[in-house]
Image 1 (cartoon, rainbow over the protein chains, first blue to last red):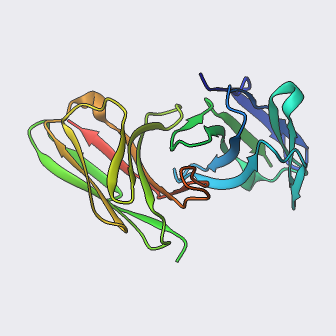
Image 2 (image 1 turned 135 degrees about the vertical axis):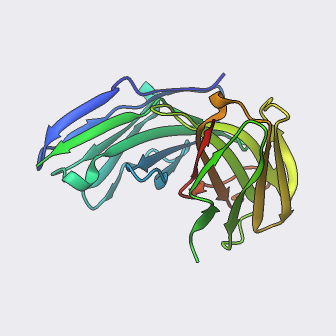
Length: 114
Length: 116
């Protein structure tokens, strides 16, 4: 069975602080895909990143960075120098090879205060 | 065009009404999805269409009836809903990256449904 765990329900930081959102996953598939989505108060889920199970390279995109470690089944997301506009719910998600189903974690609600 | 559109944005309906939610994408994606999302919960998959054929029905009650008229459109027909069906309904689409595995999903803004 596949599972995604986001243990942090809510995180509150002050603007310009760095923040890391944790994601731990479980799967028996040898090929799988991991995703992060952002859901601002407007409601629309916005795709941030996809990582394939065979590519453990970390990735940086502006203030965002992702750390993928198969050894610990983790795919953590760090926002550097957070901004108020980063306030949203962030979902980590997993899909296996050969299927349409994406399993979402429970989400982490991030509050960034000015 | 890199967006998924959904209409209406808000819908209030009685338990005896019949209504439809509409979703449209022009990105050439061949998989389209309906999700239901309750407050403070992750999206729950309802249906998946692949190449205009229903591929997944997650044991959704028959009062929800999906339809995929063509590769760009996805409808969700609603009839005799219950108050507990009130939620945000999200449509998404994705593009195949291999024969059977699909890429990341692009979501529409959702329809916020209230059933009285």
